[in-house]
Every structure is written in C-alpha cells, then in structure tokens.
Length: 328
Image 1: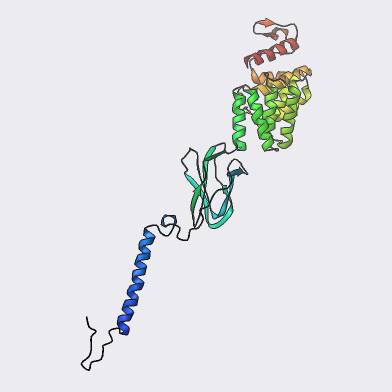
Image 2 (image 1 turned 90 degrees about the vertical axis):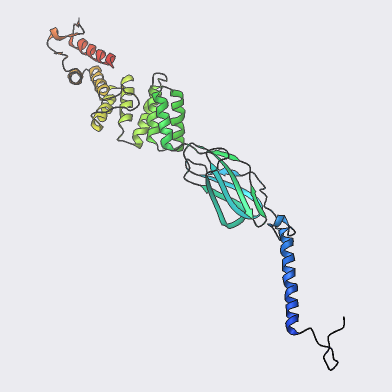
C-alpha cells in the first residue's frame, strides 16, 4: 500500500499531534489493564493481599498472664515484627465473646489488660496480631481469676455452716492473706478454732481479739470471745463481752449458727455471774429467759426444777441454768 500523497506529489503526514496523543494514551491504558489482570491473577505476591511482600507477623513466645486479680488480668506476648494487639476471650472454650484490642499502636511487645472480669472464673483466650503482611493468632490459653474478698468470706462461712471446719479455716486464712485488715477473716477463724471439732480455745480468743482491734463494733467477735472466756473460766471478761453484744444488738442472732443468739448470750451471762457468786444477777437473766421459774432465794419450797427439789438456792439456780442450756 502506497503512502497517501497530496496532489502536488508530496507525502501526507498521518501522525498529527492529536493522533499521537491518542496512541500514547492507549498504550498507558493497555499497560494498566495488563497490570490489573496480573494483580487479580496473584502475580503481586501473597495471593493479592501483600503486593510488596511484607513479612507476616509471627508470635515468638507463649502469651503470659500476669497481674491477676478478681476482676482483671494482663496478657503479654511478643511478635517478630511490628503489629497490632488483640485478645479475644470468653468463659467457654473456642467461644470468645469479648475482645480487647488496639489497632492504633503497632509494636513487637504486646500487653493488654482485661477488665470487668468475673471473680473466681475460668477464662479461655487467644491473642491476635496483624501487620501489613497479614495476621497471626495464638493457640488457646486459659487463666482463672482469683476470688474476690466478699466471695472468699461467703464461701468460708458456708463451709463453717456445714461444719466443714478444715475447709473453712483454709478459706478464712486465704482471705486474711489477701486482706490483712479483714476483721471478718479474724472473726471466722475465731469461730472455727472455738468449734468443738477443733476446740483450740486460746487460739480462738486470740483471733476474736484481733478482730475486735480491727473492728470494735463487732457483735459476732464479742459473742465468740465471750463464750470462749466462759469456757476458760474467765468469768469477769466473759461478762464484759456478753454485755457488749447486747449493747450492740439486744436482738442479736449469729447468722451462721442459729443456737448463738441473744438468749444464749443471756444464758452465758447467767452462768458467768453464777460462778462469780453474783446469784442475784444470774437470777435476773434467768427471769428474762424463763419468766415463770418461780425461784425465790429465801423460799426453799421454790427450789425445785423439773420436779426435782434442791437443798439450796444456788443448787436450784444452777439447775435452771443447766436446764435452759439443754433446751438450746
């Protein structure tokens, strides 16, 4: 094919500035289309997600749990490249219903503190980090939050109520170690050591006294120490403790033993007064507990209890005390 020519015989210039621009633009467009095709085919590396081949992060140590409390835990781990930090966690294995994360700060050293956790609860977790090269997750780990002081106290008292005294002592001791100023731990230990299954009265008295140092207005510790002192024949001190109980609460009831109440405290007062030969004071408490007893110091005809007559007023008074103790 011959080149186009004008009538004067000269060749025509078919490459104008406009047609040249069109050709150049076409080549650019074609290159872009080819690049896009290559990209979509995975020629950019890392299956199209990592065009410059950034390294994928790797967790280089086992995640560590620290700063564990009743409501918090801190998870730490390390990656080999800068990456984000996330902890996914929950109370069932493989089911992570909560997440704590930070996408703003990238680092190789990761540390996330989980808050608002449940006391004494087993948690399952994984850590996850992401960089430009992709994401990585750890294997599942576990941690268990410790008991909150209130939960420790509740568990200890429940052991005491069930007369599982060894377990109650262990739990009260754990509470005392966790909360050195817990008067409730000292009170609980006092009642445990005063229990007939343990019967360590001197030790019990020491714990009750420790509780009262921490919390002076403490009817449970006063009552416990009063009964211990009564058993140790420390009658004057027992009277002081029993009277303080009734001053704090005239209708006192010990929540973890229904037999310890205002009536048993008054009976303890009667017994302590009796052994100090304060017969009138002892009689006063008996009259509150058994108003129809009819006992009169100067009338031998009234010195009978349960159909049995006694040769002296003190003997009859003591018989009334023993009768009321037997009734619980």
